[in-house]
Image 1 (spheres, rainbow, N blue to C red):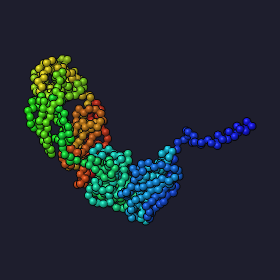
Image 2: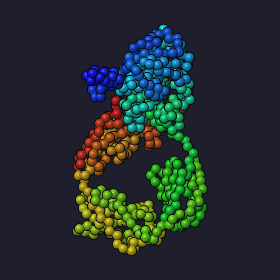
Image 3: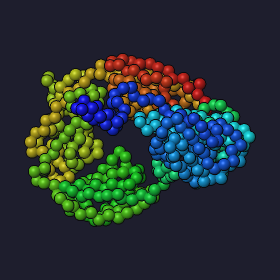
Image 4: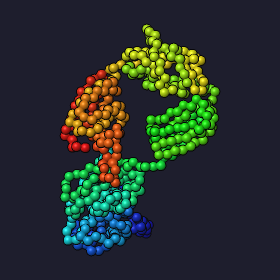
Length: 523
């Protein structure tokens, strides 16, 4: 009897047990497949507004609206529903006659377990009797750096109207890959306008503040040559204004929203010992003053403004001390330059007789120049690998706040050697009649710039050692800077090329190269 009960109890346990997939084992990497569709993939003469896709396993839908790309573009969004292993897609638009439609599902359809995307994410049908089979491909690169641009929207327009990039939804759309490449497939035999945009807000148009690219002529789907699109940020004609102001510790700082190279300032109130500075990007003005308030008028090329500034916090007495720093590293100072010192505050006067340069075996009396009220230049040739000490005797300098050095100031300077540098001789041949800008770039920083208009030989001495890129801008409007394009006038950005390989500049070397431009097309 006991044996019988045990057997029955065991049977109940086994019958009620829940079967689960064992943990571990090989990962499922098999993507879902379409086993049946209506219409069939690559079918013709489609007249309906509903697509059915049947899969070999249960699937999940993710980011359908974002991932699914239909060309020619639809005006109304697709509707979809998932029933078991079947996906039903409803098309709300009226499809164009005799058009080949491409549905690219991206990664919107995945299996449930591992998220493997559909094995073939392209579904094609034609509303006419034939499938179009032509293509247009190419690459989107940054117009200035020539770096490939990923995730850029690329547009095709069948219309030849102007300003479509900013006004109209394109007929065809695709996106660039990691390497900047793009491809339109299943196109009819016709010509298109080709353009691209960052499309940050995903409205399938270009908007102000987004980078764009375009071709200045129609492109044909029967032309198999890859297209190159140059992406740039159009110049925006913004209204200029004062963005912010700060007036602390005898220093008023005015920040503009845009650079202004031709700024004029008028003082509308008494400004005692005022000293004006403008930064390199021409968007920040600093006024040093002993006054507690300032009233000034600003005049730019396209704006004017009047400011009333009140000082919030005056300079502390404990800070009333003049200090200097060399413009270059004082332990590795360029041997071929004069010593340049920068003061912490604008200087009112200097006594050049109180400036001395001392070496272990000599005392030097340089010519002393005050260049821009904060920089002092000590003109005297320097020797390589030499320890110098700049000495400013008491009362040698006085700033605009009447602060002077009551103690001797000593600033050590150690020069480096010519072996720390390299020299480059660059011969340019085959240059077209044009204006050119040459940049020598090291670690993404422009080290030297030169301008020329014909075949030339350029010499660059005392370059920091390392690997350089040579970048050439075809300066067509001769304004000595690179300019982007003009979409309204179909004017492309100014052409940029790089020397085909990096130029190695080892320490102490003289490098001689020739750059032949004969193989280039006329810019």
